Image: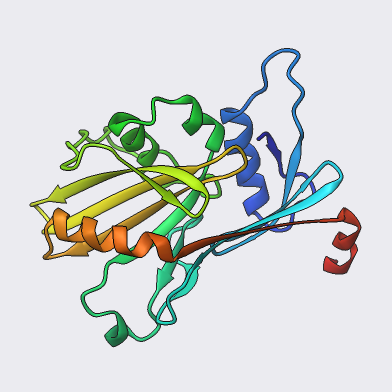
Length: 219
């Protein structure tokens, strides 16, 4: 989906313009519906596409956690306001991606790692400066999975230097894509993988469409 941030609310729209245009230029003669980011908050966004308003929200059904900004611009997190309620549970963060670029890739271990090195769609940078990191080997290869109605792939990293395990999940369909990153220290990747697989069915995807005339109520 080609994005433009003209007249969008806040700086996120400008950044989405840069990321979206560079990653999804249409082929000659291809009819493309131009979408404008209207607003983004946490794991939700609202965009204006032609004669429709479209919204997307990623929800985690867990009363212990709330969604918010995870401290890095363009990323969201499913955090525990009361730390004691999530003892022994992984940290969960995420960000939106260019779904067209991902769907055109091999969607393999290499493609996941390369995606993790790029800035989030609504962010300035994630990794910046310095040489490109060496690609670690996924301990579980590439797992196929789903979140709600959306297909995805996952890789598993064990980082002995930090004692941390990571499971990176990439999910996308024709309209939207996102990364979910699960991290936990002092836990091997197999135990973290099992936790993640139990958590994934608790994620829900909420979509809605409406009349652009409703935008007047946001001014």
